[in-house]
Structure formats: structure tokens, C-alpha cells
Length: 354
Image (cartoon, rainbow, N blue to C red; front, side):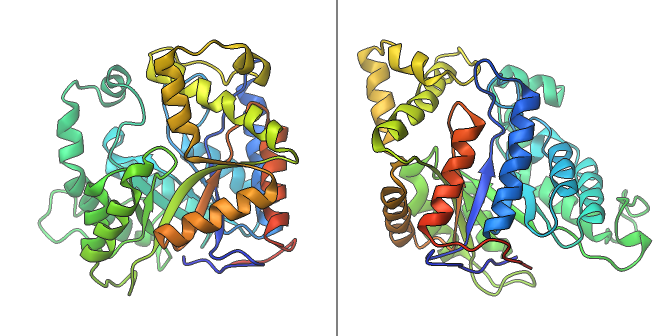
């Protein structure tokens, strides 16, 4: 589960994939890009490739992480694959156990099950997913849902429990087998503390909650209790980073993501705009303030500048692994960014991970 730093990288590098769909492109295009990124990441020594669950967002095609991960497993051989994350309150724990048991059977020893407690969407869509408008109830029940999911994964409900005779298949009931390691994801302190208490690995969403990163990681480390899974804390942070050959081009590309976020935050989600559309857009003073704040947490520029930014972030946070998400309108720009970052850290090709 723990990665190994390769080349000149200070810690293992990984990929967080939102399967973004640009204006003029299709979900098919986006999913093909995800395969290309996974293959590139594997060949250059990135440790893992995670897919995030989002719903009702035209610019994001990752509503079904388990389905996408099965597709990526068929096109890769070594890289770890996982959810960053599956939103547990949206699903029955048994369903998740079955899905990720299936993934583990398809790609033995390569699957991570990252879990979040947010809906991954707006309230109305969350209500449609959960068939209830009592949304806080699902989030509040997260520890109980997590415990139930873990029982299904381990097939160890105690005698007399209502689910003692129910088995997640594929799973241990079929014979000795590994199961996907569980990670907790978060953007605040709740999951940080829970991950620490349970001795689980923790992934923090620095890319959209940067102000909470260090407090959450401190809380995780302070709360950590050794477990059968980890003897010491292991923290990954998601970071938005885009490398281009030219600094001006990098700024031009990341502005598309900033405009997309403006539209999302103002109830107008859509496809990721083109660089030309973003350059021509007239931001209001309030929108410009948001854009400036947003872009201050997006590491972008030349490969050397991005490497320096990632190194500084790792030093400030003490993160054990950096999970990079490259947001741009086109798949080619995203692929090129990962290639440039790999080059900047002198990552070799064809490195095998366990």
C-alpha cells in the first residue's frame, strides 16, 4: 500500500483523475484520455491512479468509479487503482463490498477503496441518489456505515447479527483472498480524526480545501493509533498541478478550470470551457477574487516551477504521497503535464511497483 519515491521525487507521486469533459468533447473522449493517463502513469512510475465520484456535473464523467476502474484494470498491469473516492452515504455498504471485491478479483493486489462522506454533488442530486432528503443522516451515520462495510469485506459479522449469513461475493467466503485496503478521504477534520483513531491511511483534498490541509493532517497524526493495517500514519494529499512548456500557456490552461469552478459555484455547471472561452470571459470583481484565490492553490507553470511548487508543498505538509490532478480543457494537455512532471523528477519508464 505504501509507495516508494522514485527518481528525484521527495515522495511517491500518483494521479487523481476526474475524467473531465471539455467543451466540444465527449465522455468517450474523456474516458479514452483516462486510459492514456493510466498507461502513461504506469510506464513512468507513478504509484497509483484514483478516480473520484461526482454526479450531475456535465464536465465530469466519473459518476461510476467502479466501472471506470474495471476498464482501467483491463488496460494496465501494475499500477494501483482506486477510488478517490466512493461516497459511502450514496451506496449500500454491501454493494460497495461486492463492487470492490469484483475489482480485487480482476486486478489482485492493485485495488484501493477510498471512501468519502460527502455526496459528491448538490443536495437535490444527493436526494435522488439516496432516495431521501434527510441527507445529514447519511453523513452522521458514516462511522456505522464504515463498520458495516468493513464487516462485509472481511466476512466476519458475529453470530446472531442480522447480516451474519450474508456474504459479499467475490469475497472471503469463497476462500482465502486479499481485500482492498480501505482509505478515508476528507476535506475537513471529521474523517482525519476517524482515520487516525482506526489506524487507516488518510487522503486529504488539498486541491479544493487548502486552508484546512495542515490542521487536518495534524489532527490525523495526533489521533493515530497503530492498527493491523498501519503501524504509523500515512497521509496523501490531492494537489492540482499543471505543467506546460511555457508559463503563459500554463496560465491560459488553468484558467479554464477556474472558470469551470466559478460556474459550478454559481449553479451553472457545464463542460470545461476552452482556453479561448476562458480568456474572453469577463469576470465580475467577486468572481475575479474567487479565481485569484482558486488559482493560488493550483501549482502551474514550467516543469521546473511545478516541481518546485510540489516540493515546497510536500515540505510544508509532510505528506507521505502527492496525488496530482491535472485540470485542463483537452486530454492532450493533461497527458503532456504528467509527462513533463515525470521528466522533471527524472522518473524512469517501465518501473514496477508492488
